[in-house]
Length: 345
Image 1 (tube, one colour):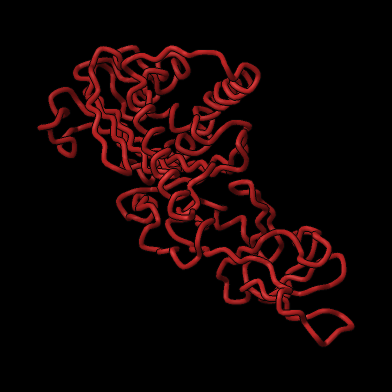
Image 2 (spheres, one colour):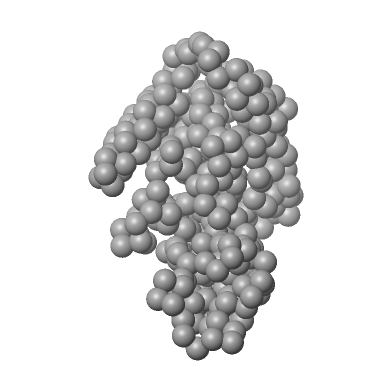
């Protein structure tokens, strides 16, 4: 089951054009396109006549025409033309979904349309702030439950083993994390003081010795994870430190936006933003193709997990103290879904 009264990323803005874009979200077929005014439109991707996906058709101005018999629908989903017939049945329509373009994302609301409040779009403000330079790689279609991505990023101990040559460092298990949570968020943070920085951070910040490093992640239900990471010179880190005063500084966020497709697959949108060396082409490459390679190291892990969980659903799994964050996140999301289902009932 999915939390439907929530905003999910449906596409990057560059994906939505005057050609139909087909996507399955929360087990529902969706077709996206841009109308004449440039605003994105999302309709249920199935014609009400003979069930052909509307994405097989074509966009004509603010309307989409079915590729089977020419039924034409406006941006609200109402059928406005049936070739050879002037009478249009009242029930000749398809569902339209609220969509909003914000923070370099096209967001979609899969639940009750009247509850779709744009003010509740997750505040990933780094994507629009002049002090931060964003990067939005291509979406990665993954064959895994979207919740596994939150599990993955909420347990940073995997960095040592999955990313040893890039962002991983064994010191992460030396420092106990601080875990905080509300009804809708989980935050896990830790400082690693006076330790060797990960290889990628050492290169990005020209660190030759030890550094003070931070690693934190916030999970915002149902499908946003924000990783905060960076390094500064020894003595400038810690809760009372001043990272802005450090002679050398690496400061970045990695934003995971996994949108559920089915129970065993998702659309993994992810983005990066950095607050240093904006005009450095080398850093542009690192936080573009370079960081994609880092994320790709997770992809095979996530998909392998999904395969084994599907094959052996009854297999018991051991949990450790580092699983507290993912467990809190899962329970929180379950409560939200149960409350929503109860309200609908």
